[in-house]
Image (cartoon, rainbow, N blue to C red; front, side, top):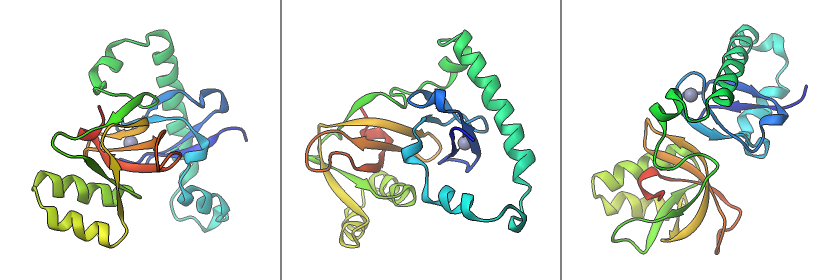
Length: 187
Ligand SMILES: [Zn+2]
């Protein structure tokens, strides 16, 4: 079949995304988290998932995916007929998936960026608690890298629930890398 399966970073909902929506900003039908439709960003989990024979699955994915697909279609119809409508305004953060932005944090030359979302949640917590030791530990473990403040990025996904965002670095040393960053650093 055409398209690909997107797994929501916030709630794990799976959505079939048709090819014609690639490059567009969509929202999770279950929780509203924004994401950029891009099959090259599909999680490795999805690829493994596709390889597992269907009868071995304990979860009845087919009806779930069918239901989710209908919701996605309904959402897409809504967003097309009314791009700046009620739903869009209700959830719109300062930046949207698919937009270019800058990685910037006040008082920091560098912004900590994580390889995975779980680590990014630790980073967000460490920043909130002003705990430089846990950040240093994550860096020693190779779980985060420092990206120069002011680096241009393209936003892929914004997870409001835990204050993280997934972005592709578009300039400098880490160009092309897809990393998880604190949402507050996306300007
Ligand atoms: Zn979701």
